[in-house]
Length: 131
Image (cartoon, rainbow, N blue to C red):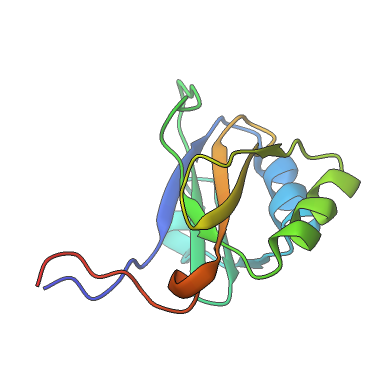
């Protein structure tokens, strides 16, 4: 039985690690976590914020996905969107998901990122599928 998501892996082009580090730490406020040495030799970088883990892996023929993306829950989404804009990141609001405030942005290599905050009765209730 699935117990949770350990991490989400996104791809990035060779040589983009410095730009990724700046974005994920300075713009998003995440912390870089060390990769095991055997994996560090492949390039890329890993980041964490609370229980959220994002791994950026190097892909030689990288093309950012146009639709695929992680959906990242945020507390205080208005302030978080302001933080991103103040640091030069694009923020595109989308009100199409009932019960949520959300916006999209992208990292410096074009990976799409969704940020959302539930409102109303769903706010603190995890959603269960099945059962």
